[in-house]
Length: 315
Image (cartoon, rainbow, N blue to C red; front, side):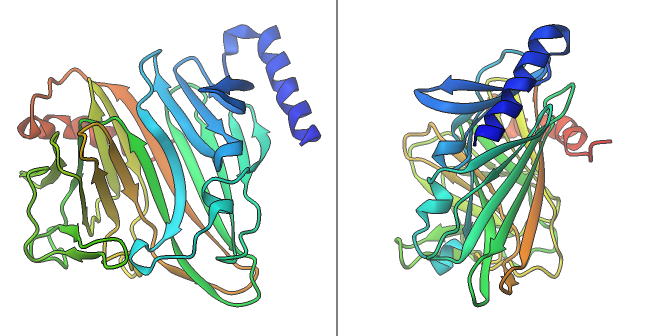
């Protein structure tokens, strides 16, 4: 850790000598958490809490509000298969290292219950709000393990949305989680909720007072949320032959009963790893302010032009 702190101090010193660059990693206190890492450039700001599971707790652009409400954490699933409790991965301290002016690597302890160690490389683009997140799970056990990576990003989005698959495996083209913990299942035949609207080819979660989790076998490779004129887009790979073991879903959205939180969740396929093997899932994010006025689900298609632009691969 001493080596890491020295590297971070050098980055901070360089930014102090050349403030016009505004591309730096700093050690900050954030929301009563010590030892957080702040990645910032002239446009955007990320804050990561290594001591809290390596969670990304802040994401903003152009001095706007934090889009997150709880932050981004990468879990292991599938949820329906109930992996063993794994606090070393979910909430435990992660080792932090700087890899470049706006890039850090976070490494968890080895989790004995699951046989997994997690590594995250987080990189902010030099000039805008693009973020690349590379998450790797490594088998550190002496036998085969099989899990998926499950991005659980809690936001303050008023509306979450994604495209429906025209060749969906679900008769309804989307599914809804039913049951109680321990008996969850996804219903893709007759889902229905006041928190869900289907507009054109989009599933949109809307404000309300009913907790719900909805999902789909999305093939478009993006999922998004919007809040007070700010649009957040996650781009991720989808694999036609992948084992999407969480009910067949590649994307999920959870909304709370208070109507204040929207969790945006891309999933990787479930993969089998032999001892020493690793699997990496790569996401790219973007955040920008949009001019379109959103007064309901019917207005969400207005954002598709911006979504498609933001979901393009970074050059």
